[in-house]
Amino acid sequence: MDMLPLLSHPLWFLCSLVLVVVLRMQKKGRWDPKKCRVDLTGKTAIVTGANTGIGKSVALDFARRNGRVVLACRSRERGQKALEEIQRETGNRNVVLEILDTSSMSSVRAFADRILRNETRLDILVNNAGASGMPHAVTSEGLEVTYATNHLGPFLLTNLLVDLLKRSAPSRVVFLASLMHKQGYIDTSNLYGKNLEKQKIHETYNCTKLMNVISARELAERLKTTGVTVTSVSPGIVMTEAMRHYNLIIRVVFNVIGFFFFKSAEEGAASTIFCGISEEAEGLTGQYVNSDCVIELPSENARDPPLNRKLWEASEAATNRIGGPGQ
Image (tube, rainbow, N blue to C red):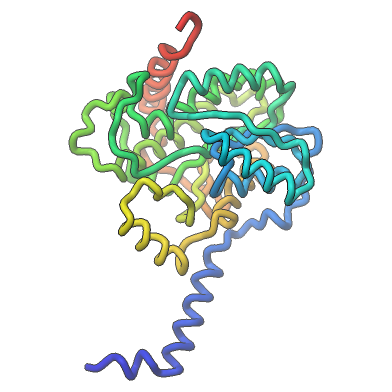
């Protein structure tokens, strides 16, 4: 059957247009940050990976709410550009740039030292920085690069700043995870780049996102009487630079499909902002929140207390031996 006459029919075109509109409307979550009146005057927030994508959108929102916002970025040039854009758009001059590379535990420790010296409080920590599609490699510190960037760096950073978070309570920590954490599994030897011969690049990402969910749940358990709320979130499928390490064909296909089906960075930031500042999220510690800003049950692996403790202890061992006193 010749499909060209059908495809050119006005009714088909109208139906297609309606479908596109509906799909784009569905990308919007149930909770709208623009309707939230929370003011952050007098509060301090750190957003990692704040020079682009979801992180930049979150930082922009916090700056609009008059908070002191620390942009924690790996690139000074890109971070400075984001800083200037956010200050210009919001008029908030209390936005600062600090350099942080979450793949390097030494960089994480140096960043945390500067924060502890320069900041008197920390009300919100958003562990947003992450990457996908990077080839398997071991860093100079002996850690697999994706596991270091997505899990061990945020894990160490949060633990180094936890006392400041407790002193600033009620405060919040948000780990940016993914719905793909449900496809992940835990093998602690992977932290050092071992047993990765058969693990595909996207599987590595899934495993690190599971680790983010577990980190949030275990930390929440350890901080349950301190006034620090810890959550993990899924932003949904978002058009960001997270695919920059994949080849050109994959990126082109992703961008074309994404135009119709995926969220923008601003839309994808909603669940993170929800957990970071909303009154509704107060006290939701240990929970996993989906892209519609609704509590959702995470994967079975994330709900395994012995496995959670095992990962926590392995992560402590992996990070404590690097960049500490005398090293």
